[in-house]
Length: 374
Image 1 (cartoon, rainbow, N blue to C red):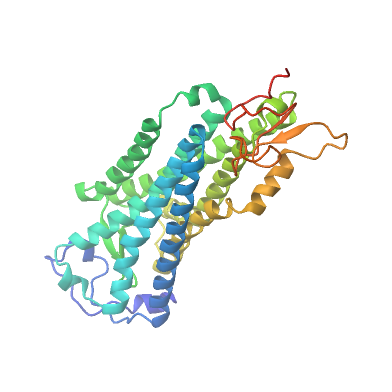
Image 2: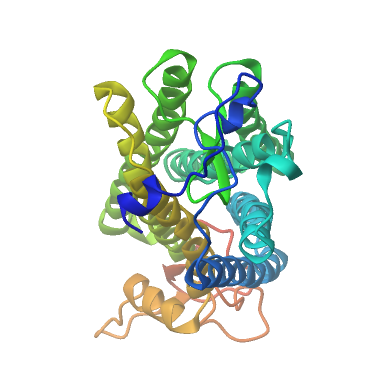
């Protein structure tokens, strides 16, 4: 879609003093008629995203049932992320698809901007939640790797409370435009609403808040994940590698890093463009915002495949080989889930922690050291 098309979309509806705030910039009905490509784009992305997240939810549920208690904290965060992505696609996708199918007039359907404000709040809430949850998961992994004893005493109810707290903070931010700090407006091509990216007044404050919260969440995730990875490398390659070589921690870090990379690629263009536009007071181009919003939507589609692919046996076998290289001298090395005899508690698929020494039936995936020689 070219800027010329976007500029010729507004109908000749005169601006009146009684025009609701959300229609003060772009007032429907529009001369532009949604193309079939736009309807297909929204339908395919929404369907693919919801299906992927439902599959990921089933995978996480099965993993939660067979996982020992220490790893369930991370799975609770992943479950909260999957629920957030699913609801975000369901709420915003249903509105966009309905517009492309029915071509409803926003001014007639929503004369008081309640519906537009709801969609704008949903876009902000479901946009910030994945970024903030990613930072919370990075913090959980940082504590779990660098302070394992402190983390082992953290109850699961506290993890649930942290997820609820992230939702509460994101919800409060999304409600700010209703209090006068920022405002939600109809966006081109007329199928969605979002906050007004502007360098004036309260719109400047909310634009800065949205972009800075998102960028800070990504920065915190990057910093904590970097420290966690360095710690894991030192543990696996240091003198105490036999005591703490646990590849399920590596697997969780792989998932978390992939989530961070996907979020950075999908969200940074919109966040940086918003920040630069309001700081430099540059005019905002609707076609660029629409493209970046579609990029951000891809985050909710790619995220669940990180959980799904990390459950594939080939990836587990690769992690097993990285964790437990074959000893040419034929020393006794046992890995949870592979070399220990079937039927024992340590023969649980998905946990391939390694230790050197004689096999003991009392060993479990939760143990952090080798079996003491008898």
